[in-house]
Length: 134
Image (cartoon, rainbow, N blue to C red; front, side, top):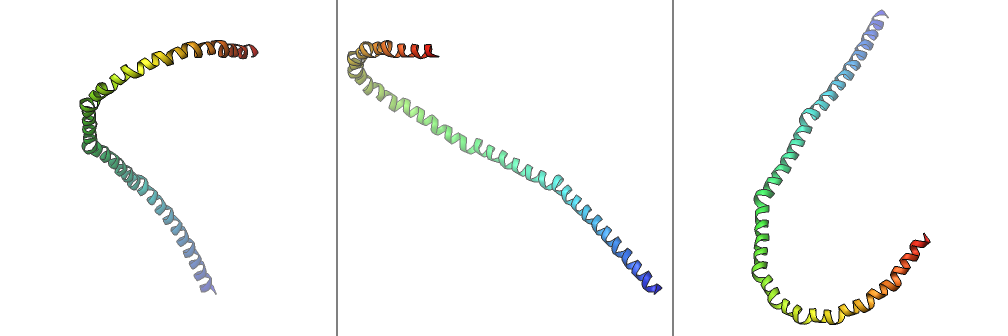
């Protein structure tokens, strides 16, 4: 009986010690994982991400932006060289000969004779009444 009791106590102590050791190792392993993530993996991912962003910026600045600027500059030059002279050559006479005289003959007198008096006779008094009512 005594052998059984001693053996039982020994096995219980062994089991408790094993459990304590396993818990301790688990905490240690968790701490190691957190440490590896915090000090190794996360900085590497952030650094790689920053590297990708920096690489993309450099690629844009060196390879994409210059051709886009060249296209813009070519378009501006072509507009100044081809389009703008045609605008002045063809549209300016139309404006001077047809649009401006029609505006001065019809639109401006209508504005002066009808819109301004209607505004003064109807809108302004209505706004004044609304302000007086408040």
